[in-house]
Length: 96
Image 1 (cartoon, rainbow, N blue to C red):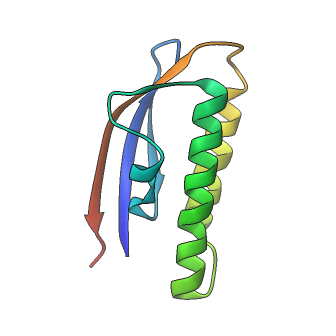
Image 2 (cartoon, helix red, strand yellow):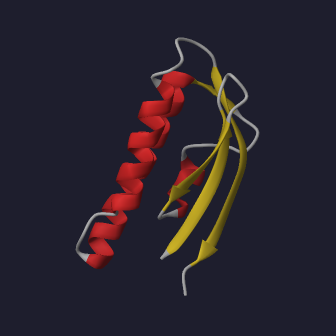
């Protein structure tokens, strides 16, 4: 199953590497794009849920890494009242 990483920059300049067990993130985010915090959280939550559902369908269990990543994004986003998150990069690879 393909997996991917994406790096985002929060409003204060902090960069955060993120993980998805599926390339579905490409359907929700664009490299170089900026998203208001609430929109970014919504998009990544939806994408990580879809990714975890794909893992469930293939392996019979949800992806705990996707759930952890979603929790981290929610936790970090809580520190900001306003601003935008920029998607710095997205890259994927096939698992062997």
